[in-house]
View 1 (spheres, helix red, strand yellow):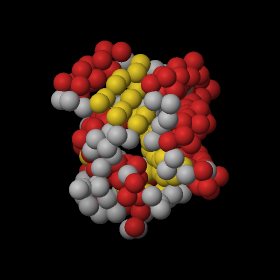
View 2 (cartoon, helix red, strand yellow; view 1 turned 90 degrees about the vertical axis):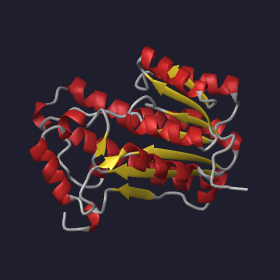
View 3 (cartoon, one colour; view 1 turned 180 degrees about the horizontal axis):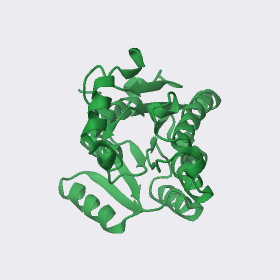
Length: 254
């Protein structure tokens, strides 16, 4: 029997209708997981849920803004009523506003922090009892190469992702004896709706490709595969790790 699967794993994936989040929902569904994914746009959530249900997958959409406490609580209450436990939490929801540091308004940088880091921190805390109930559960946080190196994404985005990386390490140690593994993946430029307009500049894209030993940007499915591995029982001895998915970028001359 093939044990490289996520059969019957109860999973929450935030930011699940686009980019890496959508690719992760698809990868997990194909591997047999039972999934709740979140996003803000009701039409997109319902359309995606119907698409996966029609294929026979166990996928449920939940309309929620991860930056709002009431929405986070609603998601977790749904998990409580539906499952009473959670095997895997994927904190994927994220956003960016590209500006020079002194050009941000407080509202703008707070939005970046609340979407990227504070929502993930709160979901870890809120889901803790359900991850504990599942036993041998896993958290995967989606950060970025920008959390470790300056790649010109803007300081709020970079610091929010750096905070995710360190949070994962701290929680991995704190919760290890309780059977909760915590790991991080940090992609380099990946084809997603968040990067489409940025990568549309052909001169900029060429520079990025030249800096990357593999010579191209990542596809969302390639990042989702790493997330899926961290979620598997096959990765049961892996915790506190930070996997940089960058096509060899940080192994060369930066």
